[in-house]
Image (cartoon, helix red, strand yellow):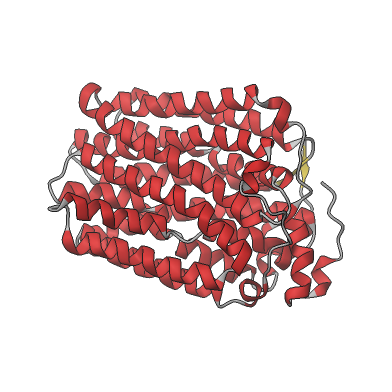
Length: 426
């Protein structure tokens, strides 16, 4: 059930909060290297004369390395704070991509080592931002709205990012684009870690357990589903490049990816314009169903104009799915694991996207572009099946609002006490 959001709870209210706009913008810019990584790697490999299979392999290596690094770095942030982890990681990740840009794909072992370095040290800025929202915004309803804004803003990046990358490639080269994008990423991370909320934030005390956030059955169920959402997105990246090559117009690729981001942006704005009641786990199942249904028509591969329209449609439910998932993570993650829990969500996307890219590459070469897009539809349907099969554990939240708990704990670390007066009521 949804109700119209009051004016005081709109996106402008969130952005007017001290530090909010800076944190959001810095995080988005800091995530540009990761957000455009699969696209940049595909264009770079093709420009160097490499195959789709090699591009898929490098993207898979990058995605798997990111998947391994995110929860480890997220746990380090929970234990050590944000500045001591985020900025050094951003610098090391940028150095990895710079190494690839400067040495090319002539030495495959070096190329793979470079992308693994870049992926492994991708800073957990997504999880870090979601950990900061409670200390910046305080009230639970504002934090949930910030999750929706976060998802919408990501789609701005995924819309503008491919266009920026395409522009850099057309002005210079794919190698130069890699260097510029990663330099911007370091600057974005710097803007975040120098902010007062980032410097002051401390995670809530956590129970010592080697599994960390993964000891929550509900979180594991959510991650299992989002693995297949990531698979769908990863397959679209490779299939869209093949579609553009089939049409003999490389620029079509950028437009398709921008259209997908635009659809998610529109869907996210509509979703965030309402306040939602009822269990978010049930709502998430409906949203994933709609996401899967909208992926299926991509396999028709019509002409560029119609395909662009289908790309917009395929993205409409992505941001709402993400915004709802953020709330579910908050409801199921154990206390003191907020950054790690959100980083695990990024990890499932990374592994799923890597597998999707690795599968779509050979699928395109063996059976054509439509088959690559069919992988996306199949991934969406399996994601829904996982949610349906694990409905029992998802329906019994075991967390206690770790984000809100962390916000209260941050008071002792220097956060303003006035924003922590609201009681957490999950």
